[in-house]
Structure formats: structure tokens, C-alpha cells
Amino acid sequence: MSSPVVNGLSVDVEDWFQVGAFEGVIDRDSWDGLSDRVERNCAQILDMFAQAEVKATFFTLGWVAKRHGALMRRIVAEGHELASHGWDHARVFRMDRASFGEDLKKSRAALEDASGMQVRGYRAPSFSIDQRTPWAYMELADQGYAYSSSVAPIVHDHYGWREAPRFAFRPLPWSDLLEIPVTTAMFAGKRLAAGGGGFFRVLPYAFSRWAIRQVNRHDRRPAVFYFHPWEVDPEQPRVAGAPLRSRLRHYTNLEVMAEKLEQLLGEFAWERMDILAHREAGQAVELAA
Image (cartoon, helix red, strand yellow):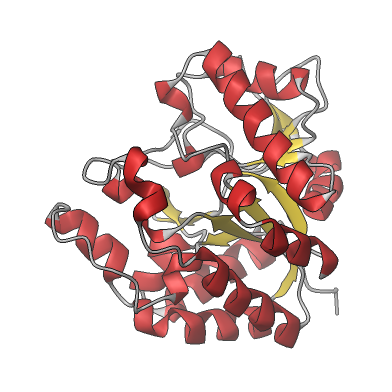
């Protein structure tokens, strides 16, 4: 029998008040006065990973790294990769190249200062690299990033680049920079979001099992899975002023997320995103002009 495909495991490290769903009702200037729960939630996740004997990549906001140096050092000390999630969860398609470049530099400096580890990977907040931001890859390449995992090749009301390849691709003909999109599965000729986050938390576990098996067995490619620390925290504060759709997306099934994650970690093989990127480099396609 062939060996199992090893999938990419990642955590998008942001606190409950930093999510895109609440960006219209929670002002950034208020963040320092809100209940900080990211360290306790990440500690739970690190313990879970240790129990399952898996390693992952923690795509972390620079804002968080600056305030939680001990957590950054623990992540690295336990064998996980620390990578950038930008400074304060600003979406890339709302920046220009210059401001994006400053955001990259500021977040990387905070992560490297806190951890002592070189940062080579990046994930855009809310998967916000798409057809509107061709300059984003140029800036990532110029700043020496090895890979990005910033594309959701689907249609979504908050993000998505429908025409992007489903698996690893090189966005620039003159650079080795690799883009590794979050996982999609195929059904009736349509792409379905299947890479984790709210889709994993809200939908039955059987859907994610089916989707990852399809990618592993049919496509013979690794899945890319992500989730957030606040998703294992059913006791987090409630944001009453947020739109109903945002509240439903954010709070549904928080109480079962940890149990579902434990099942997922035990059922499939997992590794860090930088190791996955190294393996996927040989199968990457060139992005069509």
C-alpha cells in the first residue's frame, strides 16, 4: 500500500475581537482594552498538538506577537513554524503595494524579535490576495518570503479568487515564491470550500473527512487545513452589535470544535506548511497570465 499523503496543518493566530466578521463594530483603537484570550487558547491548541504528536504552522499577527513573546517562543520551542499573518488583520485588497510592504516588514520584525526564528511564510488575513492584488506577490518575493498560503480558490461573500489553481502554483515567472491555496473539494463540477475554519466547525465532520480523502486519494495531493484559536473557546465574549450572519458564523458549534479537531488530527497525517511547501515545489504549476 502507498504511504498516506501528509497534509498541511495551520493556525491563524488572532484573538476573538480581531476577526473580519467584527471589523465593522469593534474599533482597532479599542483592542488593548478588550479581554485577551489568545494565549490561553493557543496553549490549549499546543497541548492538543503535543498529544497528537503533530507539528503545524502558526500564522500569527504581528500585533499578537508583540504582546505575547513567551507564547511565540513556546511555539518555536515545541517544533512548530511561526509565520506571518500581517500586522493587524488588514485585508490586502484594501492596501496598495507600499502600505502592504510596510505591513509585511512590521509584522515580520515583531515575530522574529519575539521568537528568534526567521519568518519565511505568509498568509493574508481573510485570504485577501486575489486578482486585484498582482503586486502583492512581487512584494512578498522582494522581501524574501519562500511561500504564501493566501488564496481561497472559490467564490465567497468576503473573499475568493475563483480562477486561481486549486493546488500549489508559482505566481511570478521570475521567482521561486510558491502559493499554496487553502483546500477545495469538487462536487458536480463545482469547487467547495473544505479547508477548515467555519466550514469545518459548522458542517458535519463527515464532510471534511470526505473532502480531505478526495484530495488525498483522487488528486494525490495534500490538503491545507486552518483554524483559529478563538474557535476552541466557547466562553469568549459575545459581540451583540454585530450583524446576525456574522454572529452565526462566529459562534456556531464553538463547544464541539476541540473534539472535532482531535478526531481530525488522529485520522490524517499532518505537517508544517514550510515542509509542505518544500515538497509541493516540484508539482507547482505556473500561474497563467
